[in-house]
Length: 191
Image 1 (cartoon, helix red, strand yellow):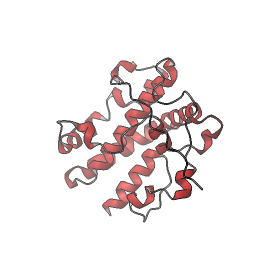
Image 2 (tube, helix red, strand yellow):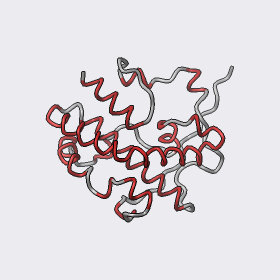
Image 3 (cartoon, helix red, strand yellow):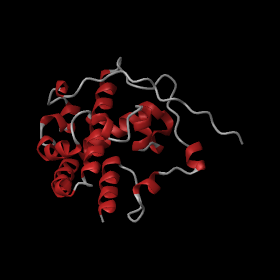
Image 4 (cartoon, one colour):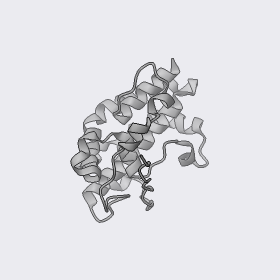
């Protein structure tokens, strides 16, 4: 049951379709054809767009939503936090869905140009070189502590993506971005 909840949470957060009965690891495994068909970031568009404030803001917001979805998914495995996290995250996601859709659309267009319609959350995450596991980002904070504070924290202006996107809340509430080298481009397999 818990795997289904994690899968549902991740699918809602990540905007990707996932079979309800498939374990998350199996649902995210790429076939050789899918690996070969992965989208390629347009030339000169890897990493963060420090010279384009509107794109940079969307990149920062995407990173925030990505980290939040990773934390929420990890918290579902902790029985003491599972229900409060589900409730808080579902409420937050419902309120932020339009902003998330806008952010994903704009970044897909920026990174993938004419193939933007094919882009999914993992493509954008890869383009930004984001992690896919929350543990390294927690540093000295335990997962239990992070999960205990999440239902209260998620209601703060820092997570109001809709207001941050429109400028009705100052973007200074977001963490600073550290320059990340572009993700390596793997050569296509020989045929």
